[in-house]
Image: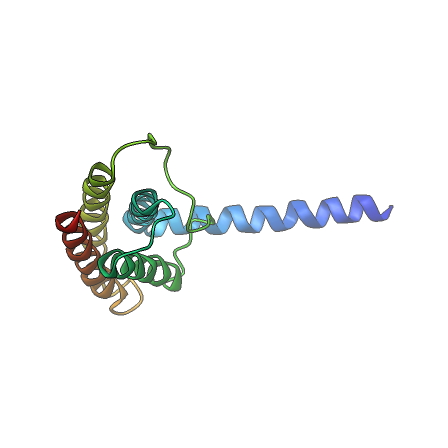
Length: 148
């Protein structure tokens, strides 16, 4: 057996572990994985709105709250195996307020998904904190919209 065959076998075994772990999380916490995807979409929409401009206080706080939700869901060992910038495909080139309106919609849907989870099984209080952080992010995005 050569080194290439051994390395290929190790890589295949490791990829199977990663895939089975993601599938297990999907089976145990499907709403959390859906929420995670929506929060990442909201993050992307907020960043599209900012598009290289200096961030306002409200935009910074909204982004901070969104990042906290992503981190908390991942801390509960519910990881989709994707990075924070991975999001569903969305149209680009909309004006800033359209992106912010969509951002609020995704955060609201994510919050509703999180509310489907049983908090006792969702790492002892992380669900409630994630819901509160979604609410805070929505508040800051709404404030950012009113300043545009």
